[in-house]
Amino acid sequence: MDFTAQLNAHVARVERGLATLVPAAKARPARLHTAMRYSLEAGGKRLRPVLVLAAADLFAPALKSKFRSPKSKFPDPLPAAIAVECIHTYSLIHDDLPCMDNDDLRRGRPTAHKAFDEATALLAGDALLTHAFALLAQHFAASPALATSLVRELADAAGSRRLIGGQMQDLLAEKKSDATTPELEFIHLNKTAAMIEAALVMGGLVGGADTNDLSILRRAGRHLGLAFQIIDDLLDATADTATLGKTAGKDAKAGKTTFVKLHGLAATRRRADKESAAAITEFKKLPGQAPFLVALTEQMQSRKR
Ligand code: GRG
Image (cartoon, rainbow, N blue to C red; front, side):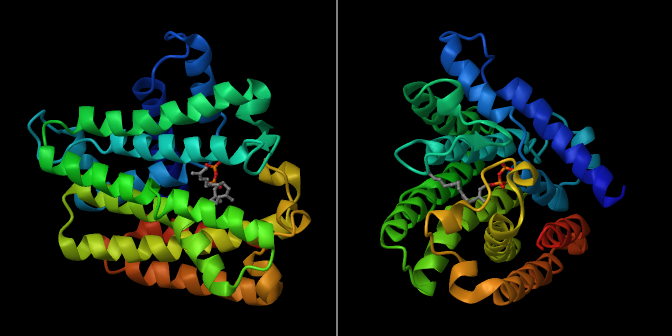
């Protein structure tokens, strides 16, 4: 299967997982569940859940999973993928709130607090965050050690030292608008790279990767996450709102410190190339040299202008 077909197959699997593994919109209270689904179903690239599925496939290929018996030592990674997307979507909903980034547009649609109201958006984010851990506890109950590792990985990535810590540091940096390079790296490593790293590691955990391969996935995720955020900064500076599906040029307007502001466009592009290349070097050390993950990194790299 070529890269695009494989990507489409992973994304379709994620969409099916979202349809079945998250409470129905009409579940009581319908307003809350409708808001959760509104944000989840608004589209999005599904990068993180695809990373979970692709990483799991390296160790327990889809072929095996097709013939998986209920007692198989390779559980289905899909609930872990959906858990990651739930956390990611919660973070976007909360990031868009008036008390944070105060944005009107996300994934090409009005943000959750615009489509509903602030309280509903806040609760929808809270509920997605909680649901992520319920999914892990429920679907990996047959393998308690795996369930514990997945919960630990996701909780660490989404917690106060990583995703939430990165967001806090970002808000602090915005106020003074003169963040230094180390501060910016802290923000990117935690606000963005933590969830990308966790997605790869969680896929590896479900697939039964050994400690060495888990370390490789973690390093690859760190480089891929940095490349992803640097490219996002480049696109914010160079693409338009319609292309992005979110407000373009926001960073400069807010006086925000980004790689582009600190280093200029050319050096920022070079840094993105360097991080992508480092991610690819790591991926190539994995079983079968991870051609899908290599191609995905190359495709992401080609988004930059
Ligand atoms: C509120 C705890 C909390 C955290 C917010 C995710 C986040 C942290 C803020 C969103 C703003 C931002 C630029 C974050 C960096 C990561 C990033 C580029 C997120 C957008 O991810 P995509 O492009 O979005 O994968 P889609 O919509 O495709 O899923």
